Image (cartoon, rainbow, N blue to C red):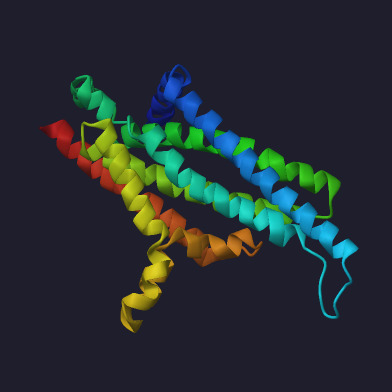
Length: 260
């Protein structure tokens, strides 16, 4: 109970530091601008296809362009890809900045446990990522009001985006704990996240023994069912496992550094 209380205290302090950070506002604004651009671009393409379907002779067996297939699913997949680039910017300063400014020494003698410290900082950056996601969810929410989209589909796709945000944030947390340079932490987070994201494309080149493992390591594979509206326990277990392993790795690294 004390660990949770201390973690929430650290979270509040970190959120206050993020509120006055121009980087946080820049990342938030850039993410929402790109999300809006891609959403209205997809919606415009869908309207064009729908107009062509109405004006041109309908071929036998052809189907009406589907809003879910043309707009909703691609949009949420794009959000996941955008988060991959946004996460390094909001996580690279978590521990690296403390070390660069020498305030990490104060953390070393702090009565806070390493677990509450790591958990608190993670919750802070994840809260910012959730805020970005909630802003981007407002675009498809308008479609739900004015169309026949299923609400359960939007919720499932939103869960996929939030799970991906949790994964990319914990990756950034680990690399920020490993170095005292923000740029190095951000670059390493981006590179590792890109390798993880595109790992499914390597499945055919690693042989049948490791193909399934490599394919399932990718968040693209794990979010595919969620984006299509199918919630799977194995997909949720993947994200929970990665986040827990990342937090444990961060606790181990920070605990070792505090003892030095």
